[in-house]
Length: 31
Image (cartoon, rainbow, N blue to C red; front, side):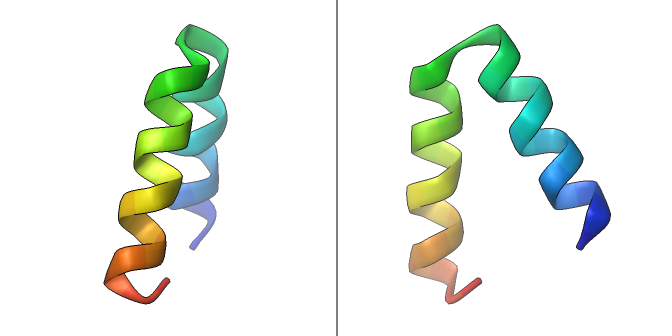
């Protein structure tokens, strides 16, 4: 789980849109 959070933080730093997309995808997967 830590890796996922780290990725979200990294992507969020690069682009908010990317973080939002990843968050939405994670929710769809049932994360």
